[in-house]
Image (tube, rainbow, N blue to C red; front, side):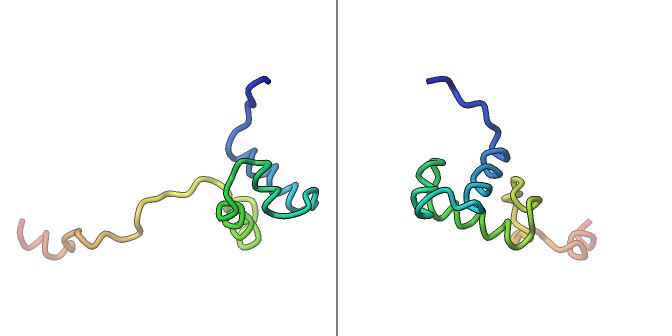
Length: 79
């Protein structure tokens, strides 16, 4: 069996195309065919329905805020 040369974004698009066409009997079967968990499948579908194809791109895992950063005014006073 040859190796599949598919990028992650392409795999997500193929998954969503099959989801929208309903080629599979159940959502579980669809996820099994793509080798992903149902949780991941539902996450991709939810993102697509909320924000379109752009939302499927890899997203940063960096937190929006850090509770350990010293505020700018305090850093300025120390310096």
